[in-house]
Length: 71
Image (tube, rainbow, N blue to C red; front, side, top):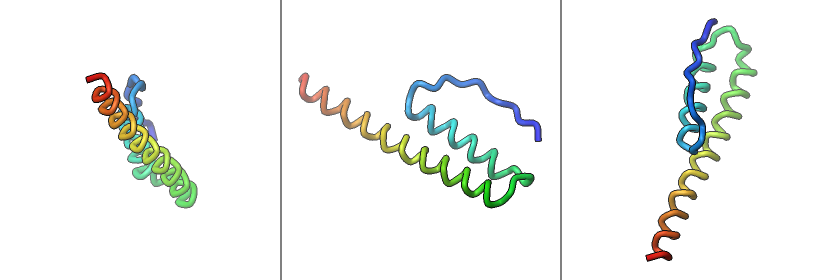
């Protein structure tokens, strides 16, 4: 299976989420992988994605609090 890789900058949590989403979808479409290995990889990437979402939400809330303290 030949996969075209999209070039991306990864410097924000939302960039990580987009990359992980793309990779999870690639795994889901790959019928040549062992189903157990595929499930493990998807579970791992999903866990990383959830952590990225939490970190992004935390970063946004922290910025709001910092702005409130400045003002």
